[in-house]
Length: 310
Image 1 (cartoon, rainbow, N blue to C red):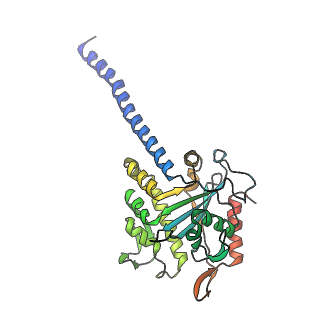
Image 2: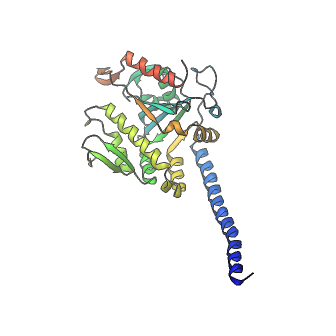
Image 3: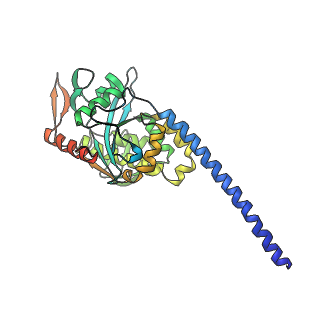
């Protein structure tokens, strides 16, 4: 064997070692991600005082790709009280159809507050009885089982948006909110800008319904950026932001099942709307949103069908 061939063989022998080192680095990184993710998801876990919704005859199994529902509560903490759930979104996830139905409930909706014995604005349920009373009241209003609930601290939501590097949305009209100017068209928002973008309501010709569309835009923006390569590279910061600001009754194992079996459904979100109701002043001039009963039944029917309850 000549000297040139010996050099080639020597180079070839080096490559398995390089590959082994790279594999160890990648494996170590993946292991770190796994342990950090496990810790974060356990910090997010907050059980509720029930095993099964009264509106289900039997429980769901995520490993079998059963459709499920989740209530997202965007909570503004108030000094001296529990705060209000100013954002209430219900999502019905169907992995077989690979779609998610999403509906935002107007926060001023006049409805029965389950467990409090009153009829009031729906967003007051959180102040009266926290996550449990909010979940029970939404379940009663929509007449569907709510399997999971996710509470998001809206002040901390800024941190989540900033951590993923900001989000992009398409703004349908120009407006100013909290001294921040929002141009028409595709714009990029940091955490503070995203929070004000979602909160704007009085200057929107569509009122709370326009606000619901912006909520959907921001949620989809966070989901998109949160799964990007740049977010993966700073995964620890993303996990910390989630752990500090999100609480849910979904366990770690259930989250793993959702990630594995429901990913395609999260990619296609179809929004339903409550827009045929009317505002009415009652109880000493307090403004409430009164649902249109026909529209409420239509939304309920659509959600039930997507959850395969019909």
